[in-house]
Length: 79
Image 1 (cartoon, rainbow, N blue to C red):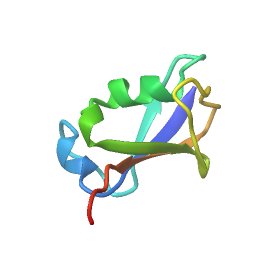
Image 2 (cartoon, rainbow, N blue to C red):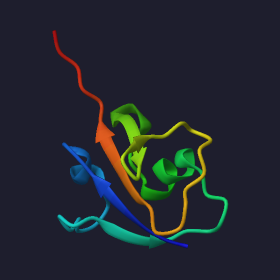
Image 3 (cartoon, helix red, strand yellow):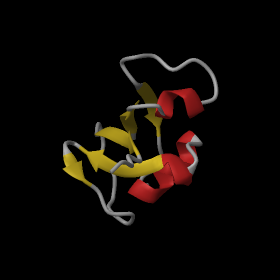
């Protein structure tokens, strides 16, 4: 299945290779879950805040649908 993954904040700097502003299109196996996306893209989990799938916050075990737009947001801290 084909999906588009967008890395936000400082996460593109952790992507191996050139990261296009429009995101990256990937072919993923059926049954891929949100937690699989993080390891597939290679972003350190220590940098990840949360993941959305088609505009909704995804849990680790949520399935990824065909043609989904997946956004990975950086962890934010402050005070």
